[in-house]
Length: 325
Image (cartoon, rainbow, N blue to C red; front, side, top):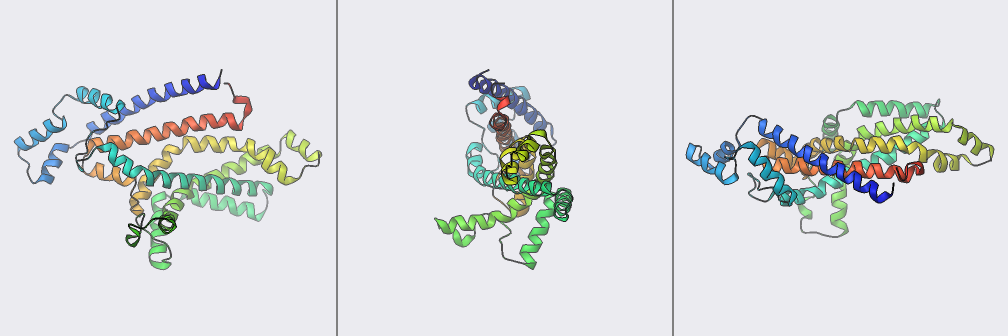
């Protein structure tokens, strides 16, 4: 099967999956107790039946639920995610404003976790019975056992009170607003350190253990022994021959856990006041802002599906045997 047909088939499955996710999210959100019209009326300072009925009519909440769903799907396919109840702005605009910080946070944490975790796993597999290998294993277990919000709170206490060398909230220093260039970039990176580290620790621990186990299996295989018999250096054997095959389970887990990474980002953004989709989703939940919450869930689902597609295609780059399947 050609690469083009593989991509088309994967995209068809992705579209079907996205529609199913939209339906589930829509039904679950609308099944939750509470009335967004009452919340909006309360914020406007009124709560009588006439005002609530007017709000429902203005936002289409007076329509039957199946009709609301059909309308939402039709508008979503056109790129219209509705109007936010809380911000009185198009949801797509709100998401575009917040998606940059979330992608920056998630990708930084993911790349750091995969790179450092894999290197630690390779280092531990070279001498599995050494003290250093045992230390990597212990640190991995500790990192994997710590909840992400608890780690974030500890880092806030450490760098906010004990060792105040890094900012603990926000994405920019108020004194840097209006500033561009390297100064602004450095300021964002300083604010990014703690949230990205918090989000990466638990996955770094998992990738290091996974890479260690995979490398131990690969290093004991026949072709590695043959490479050693040919006189190849351990560096070439480890990083050119063994590591490429050992990356398969790491890439698999990274793709499957991208959704967990997005959900973990919600907690991290809340702890560090990071202005991304997580804080937007939290505000939407507290304000019963259905369109905004559905928009965030839809976009997050789209990111997860895209990550799974990229993971699937990366298999064919790592393992030539899968090309054309």
